[in-house]
Image (cartoon, rainbow, N blue to C red; front, side, top):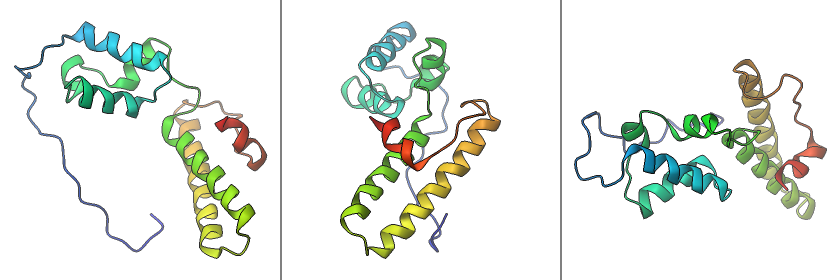
Length: 148
């Protein structure tokens, strides 16, 4: 968004919606695996990677009809803040710590400004979508408290 690049090409999921025949887990077992991994403090993306790499489950939404976040919200295991907002706040804290040691690092100062604007933009979207409370505010002082 903030660069002159044209984008990133990446692999896409297949368009077929037919059921996977070689899959050995059924819908209820997959849901139980997701719940077990969520209780061990894993984020939704980490759960998806673990299910793909360790259990051989390539596409959860194709097998269960729901996404990982939908399953976690039904079980009331979703964190208070969405994962992408939390990762931006973590990045903000890392850049702030870096700038405390390297005060003249101008590109990092610019990155800090861009990250803060992304956080505010994403928070504005999540307030409209009722994912976070309307009175939630991003403050520089409380950013490190949110991470810990």
